[in-house]
Amino acid sequence: MPALERAIETLIFASRWILAPFFLGLLVAMIVLLFKFMKELLDLVLNIWTTSDYDVVISILTLVDTALIAVLLLIIVFSGYESFVSRINTNNHEDRPAWMGKVGFADLKLKLIGAIVAISAVELLKAFVVSQNYTDSQLAWKVGIHFTFVLSGVFFAVTDYIAESRKRK
Image (cartoon, rainbow, N blue to C red):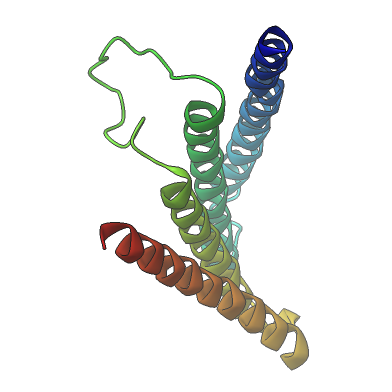
């Protein structure tokens, strides 16, 4: 029986590699975002003299939003891969991010919700800049959704704080 048990455990442990294509797919998504970013930047630069101030602000906020999403994807790829698949061996490269290898699942949740709140805030700001394009009800929904993200972040932080407090005791 121990041989069967060991074989099952080996298979289960090796199954973590099923996640690797997901992380590679997220890297492809980052490339897609890069093209979207470059297109938006090119449109902004080429139309700078004919674009209204509001449209310039919206374009810049879209660039910020796209960059935040790319950072979010990178955090997910690095942290998820290192937490669930395998350590990334960078041979102590000088550019290795300080947080890499130190972000646990709880930290990842907080980073994710923080990034989502930031992205939501940018989207909300974009909506308020052109608020005449939205009904009061649509703006209220945007504010409500953003508030829900903020509240979720607070709940995640409080939950992790309580869990850490219990571990210390």
